[in-house]
Image (cartoon, rainbow, N blue to C red; front, side):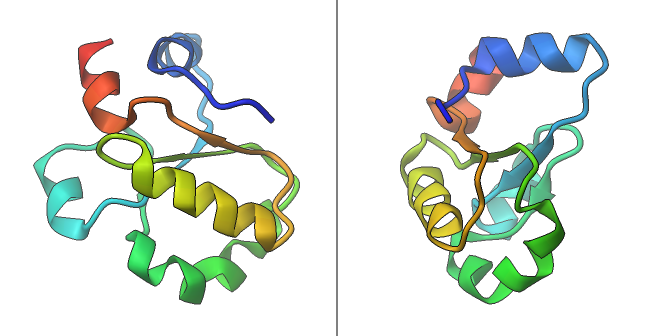
Length: 99
């Protein structure tokens, strides 16, 4: 699955869609600002939390961080564990705020 742009995500949210969004930034970063409806699972804890997300394996999951690097790692980890529809938010939270 291709990654998602901040504009595409905001458009979908404006249409009332509630995609599954996982914020892989650290907790303190999430506390400074977050995307509505996102779930915070810091990248360092994601390997231990993958089993908690099993029921989402076939659903679209959007991962994001501050700029896109950590979420690219998170996407790779989830895909490696059998998740089929993981999309990275291009440019991360910084780009989302500006969109």
